[in-house]
Image (tube, rainbow, N blue to C red; front, top):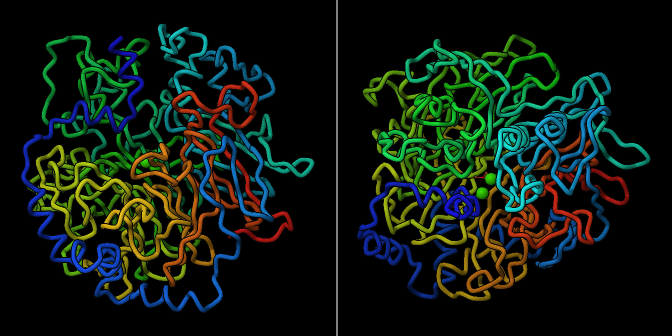
Length: 634
Ligand code: FEO
Ligand code: CA
Ligand code: CA
């Protein structure tokens, strides 16, 4: 019973349950003062909020927004209205189709998807994983290959062979582990429809059991050593792969997010260390993988959790290659990995840690990118920085080094959160995807929401006052922050920042929860999560938020995808997903006539039959969106 309740929890709720943050904090007063001073609560709240957003920074998007009302919009489609339908809605002149769904076999010798049982461990190892999320598109020798994250699972459909949807034996655990990880598939259009090319030599599943090399500062450290890997150099698997990244040298980056929820302890008296507490490891995980694999039992394999929470680099164009865990990019609940090549040639990777009050990071490679050169190990060595935002729309990157933290390089790589706390980083409202502008040195990050903002500190005890880019107490709606590195240099130590949007609901609220000036009753949304720029410099915004349509969320419909124009601040809704899903992940084919996105966990509470309809089980799926006239879409 306890386990069943636990599995109904989201990762987010599980963290709330196990996190050790103290409850008693008097931030509300401080936050109230800050907000008042900013003008949120004086002289017309909604106006006040937008005055703050557009603020005293150089971008002056507020003025641009006004200008846009007379100029022609770059968002050339008619806005989709919010809805709660159990289908995908796109603008007139656009169409969508399913490319791949959970359980689709990648090989002709694998059994067809079985909705009655959800398949077996063996069938799932040969099939498309569950809960598809971040993705990237690759082309080689006329072949089109996609790498797609499979973040976690819908137990009720995956374990439909069990009355209560719970894994009860080792094969159930094998199936659950195989539904996680990454699916690499060749795709093409046959009869005008996108689909998986079965038996392609590129087709490959990377799961929670795939061997991969540990590289970077944590390689071989005593905290990485286990009985199966006494040297601490080879990890088994990757899971909870959320957002992604793509490198100019042709590899895929998959990001391990809520890695903690898979461990448990067989001894009720197990004493949790402070560092495990900081990462939300608990004696009762959301999944009971220890049921089929002892390394998930903290009592038997106490270092196993230290080997997860990294960014993993995969070469999808070489099916025999071993994935590499890039520990230099730090260990936390990685959302995505947005890569930019700085003017001076260093590789910069922006990284968010998606947990309430955790931090935003930047990695700068030690060595430089050389077009056409050997760049394959650039992510192995470098310096990690964490963001500190000042209230005057300025900010700085604080280096995490032995000198600044008193920790060794390996310790910084493994206990990155503690290192960032030591240097006084800014606690953020759950940093999700980061997106770097393709034509400007300007970077955006979705801060999805944070009900603890101004209420209690993060799990490390760092305060969370409602100031700077996180200005709202008990932030329900989220915002998108952007920063402009000084001297247009991604490796610069300083930046300017402002907020591109404060999401909100102007139909319900007149205070700061109404959102910023570029939010109205037609385009409103909550909880921005996925972010990606297209080739024209338009920002695609995907949501993973509250779809209850009740209270403060009334009228906001299902989760959705919108497009924002960074120049004008204009935001227009492009797509609404089916019931109880999130919209995430984004990639284009080479000629940009097709956009691929993830529809993840439709019917997560049991109320969807998407995509098949009727009484079919809901299935997470990648969809392809294109224009009916075949023109470019991004
Ligand atoms: Fe998997 Fe933070 O979203
Ligand atoms: Ca996400
Ligand atoms: Ca999310």
